[in-house]
Length: 206
Image (cartoon, rainbow, N blue to C red; front, side, top):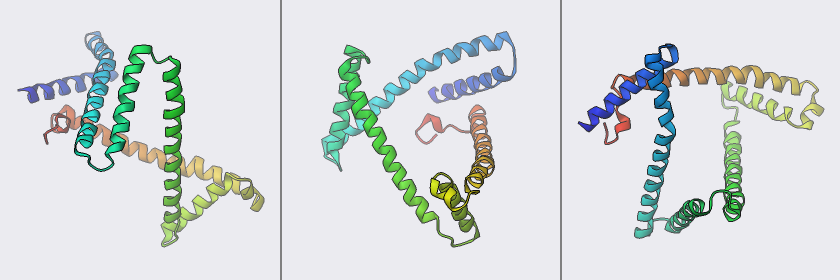
């Protein structure tokens, strides 16, 4: 019964929001506008559910001392402290702001740097001219990188222009193709949900 009700709600809301975008009908537009006003509330509950689930997972890690369980201790302590301190003293409190600016921002920057390092190593492994496609990738990647530094222009004055052409023409065309195909895939998934064929959002292997 509950599963059927959830499917009906998903179908009605999905079709209603789709028609609301294309059809100007007050009888339809007003309820859908109200549904959009509910989105922040639903999102807030989703964040709460996610936070409780995260704490539950790491609490089990601590209980069973599984893997790097001490990292779970740090996560739980910092997460609970942030929630309690933010509610009690507000997000503009000096201590809260200090922790946010000097811990979260620094950690995010570190993760970005590590990601860039792995990206560079992956690009190095990919830049091997084992076939024609790899050779084209190697040549275009080398030109784009040389176009970003002064030594590229010193080697050949036309490299910056070639690099800009690759980024603005070839790269843009490739990105648009990926965006279009991703959009078609997204619409397909949404259509399957609205028709009731895709019930994975219900969990339990539905």
